[in-house]
Length: 118
Image 1 (cartoon, rainbow, N blue to C red):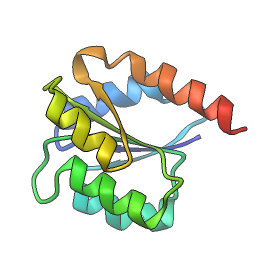
Image 2: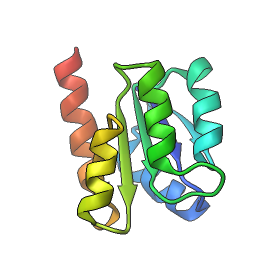
Image 3: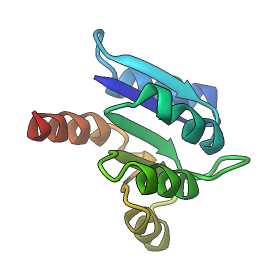
Image 4: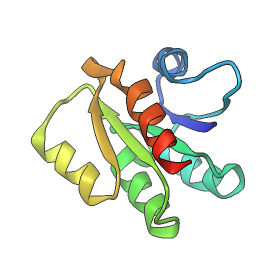
């Protein structure tokens, strides 16, 4: 599986990678939403796991840009803030939302959805 992890905090990128990526997965890491939008064209990941709060371009704006161009894109927005407005904004952008307090759910969501796509 091809995964894109978009997070401005390198320690959190490592944590997300350890949670979601298997040994055979190909992972591209980006430090902000702008970088992710630019890299999506050439990398074409199966899943994007993207932080909500980042410099230059936040996760909602980046998710919206990716999904607008690629309606079949699978994007998960993650945030420390488990807030109804953020959740609604993610869904409105065409993404799913997971609180970072429930980060272990990422693997289950990605694996289950990947099985549904096969």
